[in-house]
Image (cartoon, rainbow, N blue to C red):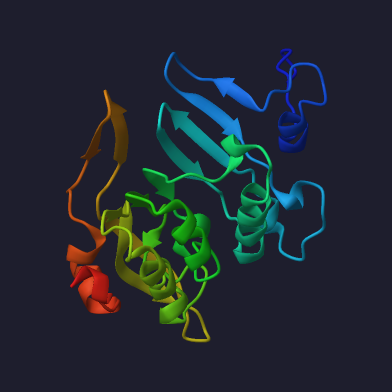
Length: 224
């Protein structure tokens, strides 16, 4: 900003309430970035994750949804706002790609949101199985709840990395250091002339086919 860069809040962009703030930014000839409305841009939440900026990238009829760390309350408000809008173009559409909310936690990627957008591909930005945020196995990312909510719509679920080894423990016996290793590695998602392509720096295994999944999560009926 010291060099003259301008910045706007998500609400200013959505409302286009100040000069230069736009609801839709043209990223390329075929791709636009749309700032979605989030109820918590202008209302209080007891969970700061609900203040996440929500984005929809549009490429013709293909849509890609990013909701940051938005929690269940925020997702339900998002659905209610867009489905209640009188402007047809703002109804939340089917999404080719969904970046799983809050790293695949059990408080995001709700069944309601999945039923609305019915994603074809889901990328979970997390390191599977690490105790960074919790030592409770069922709450480690990605959670079973998130997996079960996605499963009816797609098994194209991918994760960059996973826990490798616990290296040390604190005086309470809780892990305080660990190493990680690649699962899919760096994931590049692209769509050219309507054709989806994913490339991976490590492997192209779906989450359900990894050893980590087989050892730590249950296979949803839709994936059997």
